[in-house]
Each structure stands twice: as structure tokens, then as C-alpha cells.
Image (tube, rainbow, N blue to C red; front, side, top):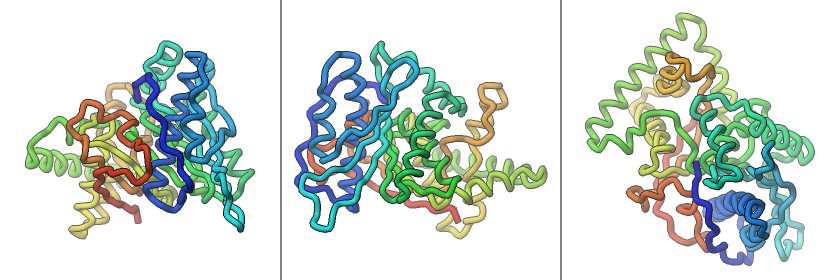
Length: 339
């Protein structure tokens, strides 16, 4: 998931980067994900174009993360402004992970991991490598505010798993997830009628509530509640497109939770938020043994790209890439907090 295998025009030079500005944050993290993709393209083509994508952002490459097949799936970048502030500029470290690349040098391996994500079984060496190096850098740097995670599609799933793992250990890392996979029926995409979508969401909520009730009777529900409570302080920024069948499930997921909360049914919103009907269906047919769905999030800032919802490229990373950080993107947002 991620797909395209061609270089695109690099971003414009930035005279300064405001790391507290939402537009700058999205701009920098999306381009650094693309820089990782360029690193892998360089490896396969014998070129060296990747620095074109991080140098204008005033970052430098610290470490490349490669897989058992030699393919580059991630990298660590450090913010190094050309003109540091008089009091000294803080060092930001960004872990970036690319999505699936449709090139023979990495395609097979990427698809294997896509299948692992779909089956909710992220136990491969690539995931372990990412988590281990994130944990090591967090221990060495100390200040978690200076360490960010970002990824697109498959890379977003890796960043999400790393963010969840660190949050469970009490380390909250700022996270940016572009088109992360959501394992479910893409209601927003395949069902055109608003009434039908609403009815299906209500039916899904009722089914999840039933599973939650069964879990309470069987004394299994507290495990999920404790996990979501542990993760609730971690609030990733999630960027999705309603035209993208891979990630649009997040729109229904958070919209339904928000509606329940607005009507005063926060307890129902919380009880149903950690149940995945898709995961339960796959468990029933033996496709997965994972009990805790990777894609479910207790809290998030959800950003929906409304400008290209009917475009066939709605899953591509390039929809989030602009030459300058303040170039227009038609975004709507939803904020959910698990309390």
C-alpha cells in the first residue's frame, strides 16, 4: 500500500520551520516519508536523489533502516536549521516509514507485510526493528517531545505500532499517520446513501455493544479497557481520504464515536471503541489469531482531505505533499479523546 514508483518534484527551500505550526508539521513529516521512499528508489536504481527531499526542510539523515531483503523501509532524520536561533534550536528527531513500493526490489516483501497488517499479525522483523530503534533513541534522547513518528500506509501501520508500544511504556510521541490501513468494510466509499450508512453504523454499534456486554460477563472486557486507558494520552494525527478504501474506515469509526459522545452516550462510545467486527470475522474463519486490533485508536486528531475524495489517487502520499507548507489543502477535522 503506497504504490507509485516515480520521483516527484522536491519541496521548496524553507527559510525557517515552525515546529509548533500544524501546517509545517504536516508538510515536514509527509515529505520525510517521501524521502524514505526516494532512498529505496535510489537503492534500486543506483541513484542519489533522496537528499533533495530532506535538505530543503533543513533536516539531515541520521540512520537508514533496512529489512532482511536489503530494502530500505524507514529512516531517522534530525532537524538542523541553517541559521540556529541565538538560544540554540532544539534537536527534533523524526522516524519516517514508507508505504508499499511497486518495484521488484521490494514489492514481494512489502506485500507480505501488508497481508500481516490485514490479518492483524504485525510480528515481523520489520516491525520489531522499528520498535527497538525507537525505544533506543527515546532512551538516549530522553525528551519525548523532540521525537516524532510518521508513516504512510504500511509505514503508517509501523509508526502506529511503535507509537502504541511506547505509549504503553509511558512514553508519548507525537505521531503523524498518512492513509493508515483500517480493516473493515469501507462504508464511506461503497455505500452512497447517507441513510444506509447511518443505519449500518447503528447496527455496527449495536453489535459491538453486544460483544462488549459478553466480554463483561466473561471478565474479558477489563483487559481492553485497561489497554485503551493506557493509550489514551497518545493522540496521533491521522490523515485520511474518504475516497480511499484502505483508510476511510477511520471516518466512520470516529464520526460514530463523536455522535455518541455529543448525545451524551460517552460510556457506549468507549465500550464499543475497542471492538472490531472485521477482526472478529477474520478470527471466526481462522485468518487471524490477533486479539487486539492494531488499527483501533483510543484518541486521535482526524484530518479528512475533502479536495480529492473522488480521485483514483486518493491513497497516494502525494495528496499531502505541497511545495510550501501553507499551500492550500481542503481539510475537515474530528477530535476524539478516550476518557
